[in-house]
Length: 437
View 1 (tube, rainbow, N blue to C red):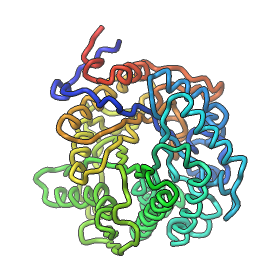
View 2: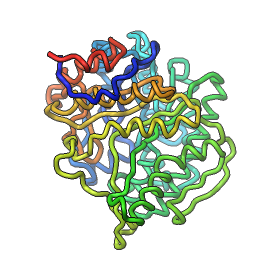
View 3: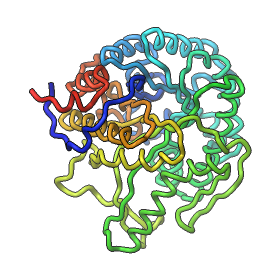
């Protein structure tokens, strides 16, 4: 067993009896052979360090990967379906692909894994991306049509739905920062894309419930902690509050009110009422990784920058701060909405598995403290089961509980994976992480 040094204030409670223990994946990052979406074309144009290629060959190895998940005492698995595989051309659906996804879901459930399916996880069919993508209202209509078909064909094998993964990240990275397709750098376009993604969520939610009234439908929402880099600087404090509100709250508030109201303080506002948006959430999925320190900088297009993590602060291989207290803070910030909560992603890039064991323990014990304080947290999906293709960063970041050899496709259990399996078996991070050799 791995020794860990943990703050005793997290060692308060065990997890609920029916808690979901799982891992999260995304189609393009693990399946291999996805050649008809915007990310494939982005890779070929030099937008990523590597080509996704075969990735983890999950398309053919899903059954053995589910066995690996069960070996770690998981009872749930989060995956996405690849829109461009299912609908390679507008209005044309590939029945053989749909059947493969059906077998994937049936196999997962046969191995005791509840299924959480994401409909859009960063990739968009190239035929849609090339005609405007998420900048066009037509994308909302196309996404609803795609959802209609997926629900009709696969809905009986799905336990939980995520309509869209990290709509805020899609808008930021693709339309503002420009490191994802379509590679634009315009905050106004980012706001427009974000607004359309929110509308698409509402359309998909209603589509799913039209066929399965008792379906459990949520989003996977990337949440972070934002703090001023300089506590006594009024501009840093103001911007941290504005950015945090935009990033964490405005999608959720839109679901509560039925009105999209996107803005960073008084800047770049998009506001509109949307039919079917109000109440379009059965649970909230939270993707949490880190916190950011916001510093005002007048010559930046968006008037701020994110400070680097100070030397000596715990961080992962990508330089992201390891800040487990932030998980408590984001979970507690959404308790007021009353939605059941699932942690749909949480993990650390750590090739040598040096920080991940403590990362897992500290974050899960932090989560226990949130449950003790009244948060209705019902599941945790670690990112990820195995190392995989990490978008523009290629294969270099290693997030897996299993290490991947991409040449042989061999998966090797890391000590952190064994630790996670023991926590899932015990149903208690306190009981496992408090032990020592």
